Length: 581
Ligand code: FHN
Image 1 (spheres, rainbow, N blue to C red):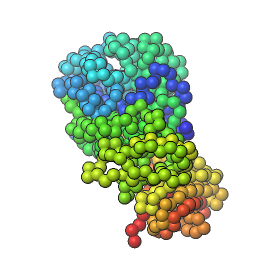
Image 2: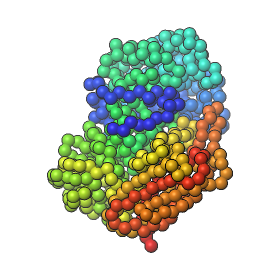
Image 3: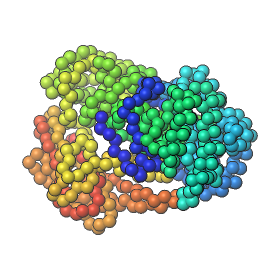
Image 4: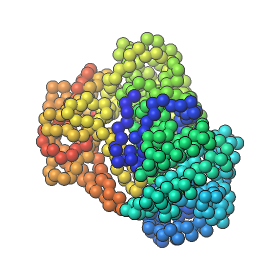
């Protein structure tokens, strides 16, 4: 499988550079499970994104840092934290209804507050809050009863409560001795507590390893292996250790990754509860993101952020249950499935289990028809899960499937097909009535490369685009080939981002077969942000219509070249959209 390209700075922050090609036996449950619940819950949930009348956006669990709350003021919140509506059973029931197979909860986030009884620090829910109950113990019991696995999130490097750890002011790092003292007196003892007081722990989920030394990460890993050899460790332990890779936050990759890996995702734009964040993903978007991750061989862990009383926001639980209902009829296409060879499919994605292929229709097919490119030597029965038989027509180049009409189409329709593919076509085949997206990662490149650009939209709210970069005038090119199964008029649109460091525009050229079309690209207005003491470039992408083209049936070749200018232009995709005259 193609390796995911990761930006080195983020690799250091998230420690995702590590990758194991050989998953150990302890990881076998993990790759079968595929779908999990992440829970961010702590003192920050009580603040709900507001401090002294001011609203904060993005990661709610960072409010102490973003609102510059003093150590004392923040510690005092523990005295008000009384989540009387917390019910571990209600959460495990939600996970079961949602079709999730394991749960990971923030045992201690960067704020340093432990959601369990700890002898290593009195800044914990049992000793410092009026609630006085051990959340981790109650959740561990409820998970055992429900047959769910439980893992603990533990922030090993950042602890804003401890002067010896990495704190709220990144310009004042602790000395090596101080940090070692924190590791020896709080982090390692607390990880030990988590592994000795709560039964079998499925995984320890570390975060932001940043400046952690190799010895520090290794000592944590050794400790975990000695106490619970079957406990998995994510790559954010740092320094290339751990059992599986956690990609960048909210990163749904366009290509797969070797070994075990996961995507962690927010439901809105925060992990910890923010009352005014209503930017929820719909059930269909979540199901699509789950499919895209699983089809590339990863696990998808979706976050919930309960409020300060322990209640899961209604939209969040309703949406999760909707996806859960879809999984009840479509789960066989998700759990315990494997990725297939990476095909370029304009309508969706494929998963596989034994001889069965599952076609996930992320785009509703026009006229109910779907094309699966490739040569097949045996095609058995096909049916749409939860609906009925699907008609199949086999040609030497592709399989054409015609879906049954249904009054109540599934959120993401799935066709199950028993078929053995002799030769999988890498070529894109498109029906003229459907939009056809030519991704940057699918182009043949000369003198340029593909990278994943990422930026924060709100604080900690990461967006990703794979882009073709470094295109030099006239010497570089990007070429896509595709076959259209019918003729028709379409617009060709380019999605791109252009740095504003040069006024005016650059000239580009699109060649479709023999026809040449020059076109201009204007700056999109990217800018540097210094919000929250962090400098990031916020990228802005726009779609520009190159023109309308009449494309006949048969093979087509589209080539992009740059004619002028040298400043940065990131090309994300070309899209062919059918035009009804
Ligand atoms: O800083 C944290 C953030 O608050 C959140 O916990 C996410 C979840 O992956 N991890 C860190 C940033 O990557």
